[in-house]
Length: 143
Image (cartoon, rainbow, N blue to C red; front, side, top):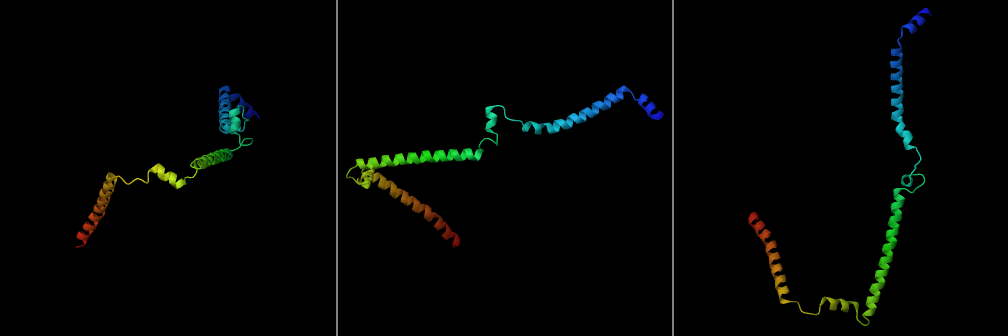
């Protein structure tokens, strides 16, 4: 017992304070490491934060599915409206056949312009030259 009392008297207050600070630093460093997990469990405060809450709000997949459904409904409505417009235009043509209306719009009854015919023939000759040149080269290489 006398030894313990002598040992306690020999310990300086500075050593006790240093040991206390080291223990406190170790304790607070471990609390800081695990402290971020506790913050993630806090309840959202702002309305923006509640949008990302997985418990009460729909997830991104559900939101995207709703958007796709809405876009599909809008597209179907637009297509139906467009179909009505096409039918009304066809009805305006009265006795005309749709094919006749297209023929008239594209001027398919008129003869082909001579310049267009000439250009077509030139393209045809150029295509034949392009095809014949490799064939001739292949024949020369084989001989």
